[in-house]
Amino acid sequence: MNFFETLRPEAQAAPESGIVAVMNRGRGRDGMIPLWAGEGDLPTPSFITDAAARALANGETFYTWQKGIPELRQALARYYGRHFGKSFAEPEFIVTASGMHAIQLAIDAVAGKGDEVIYLSPAWPNFAAAAGVAGAVPVPVVLDQSGNGWSCDVEKIASAITPRTKALFINTPSNPTGWTADKETLQAILDLARAGNIWVIADEIYSLFHYGHGRAPSFIDVMAEEDRILFVNSFSKNWAMTGWRVGWIKTHPALQQVFENLIQYSTSGVAQFMQRGAVAALDDGDGFIESQVERARAARDLVCDILGATGRARFTVPQGAFYLFFAVDGIADSRSAAFDIVDNANVGLAPGTAFGPGGEAFLRLCFHRRLDQLEEAAHRLAKWMKGV
Image (tube, rainbow, N blue to C red):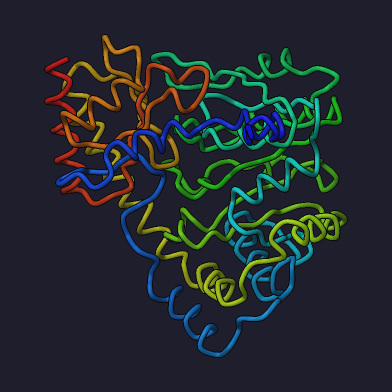
């Protein structure tokens, strides 16, 4: 029996991760410096794990609120109030089983078979793949790249809109490029969405990993209450909780029941003891976030200085997130280069081919790690560049 051919075409077409392919090449090698994944090197801090452990010891292991325990949704409202300067209410927040789950639910809510969803590329590949699995058609709009850095030409988004366009997926600050939209760009994108009755799916997971003054600009700064925006987010990056798989959606309270229903038919909710840890992260974690951002800033500057001195690496110093997306003169195939770097420099990078159109010649380096390790990795890469 040919099992494969009996699957849905969308499942058959789900792509293998180009990042994981390189990770599998390098896993377990002695001395490997793994900068391929989008996470830091610190474990979850104890003020979070202790809260979860207490809840686990207290028997909080039963079914719970599918949309999230009230205490966590209230903590999300407080967090947004502190960082975004506006008043928010508990019904605006839905707890999900990771940021990826939030993205899947957002897609399920607004787009289906034959619908189109526009996204900015190069991009974290999971959104486009998830849209494809849902039956929608992901449509890339490539960010412009020049000596002045990455930028978004809103007219290119406008040209990509068709009668089948249901959503615009906007990730800023961007993984992998570090591009960060200013308020004017966000307003122009929102104007397009309003004119076409199109949803915006706003991925602002890195909004606090911003190297300007304060957090990055947000759609919250320009939106009206009735705008069609779904904010998808995760506890993974800010609080070193990548393995916890807890996220959230911020939406209009009128959609609360819809998303609760979607959770019912996907995961039926997030474990209550994990949510207790998430409450602690939100209420007690601002200082931890600040320290992580400053640590990442120092790491960014170190890596940029060493690679920039080679004269071979081309990049824009990222404004946000914690990745350096760089090209190497004379290297066009980043997938082959990433494998070669694993084999000959013992450093793990993500190939730009994994991030879609516009990323083919680039490599992504996650610099959210300790400085001595990054310094060694950067010197290994510099040496590798001299040999190719």
